[in-house]
Image (cartoon, rainbow, N blue to C red; front, side, top):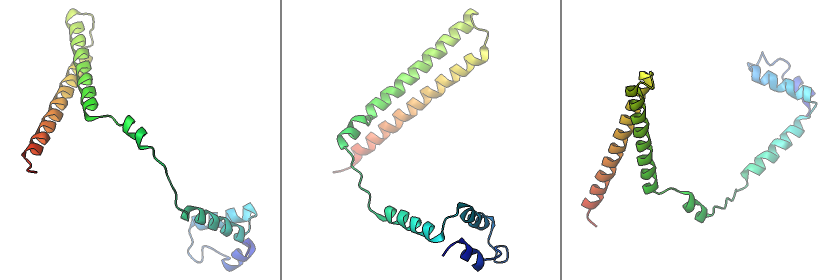
Length: 139
């Protein structure tokens, strides 16, 4: 079956309610000078290739080495909060000494430091709460 026979079957795509996508698809077949059978055979080839099982090998030693521990994550959080606190203190010193006239940035740095510290405390509280729940469980 070729494109000419397809266009004979559906002479006017508007009459049967096909949208612009179908018109564009038929038009691209006609422009490409590709037979319908060729397209269908390539589609079948792709379908057969996708139907085959895929095997993936994962080296678990590499995964374990790259995964950060909860301790290192909490350590990074503490260092981040400490850096925010130092930035806030430095901005405040510059504002009080007159070296910086940007009071808005100083206030923003102070708020960032406060929010980071509050977040760290909440994470710590949740960790302690979780640990206490584990200790209450009977074995």
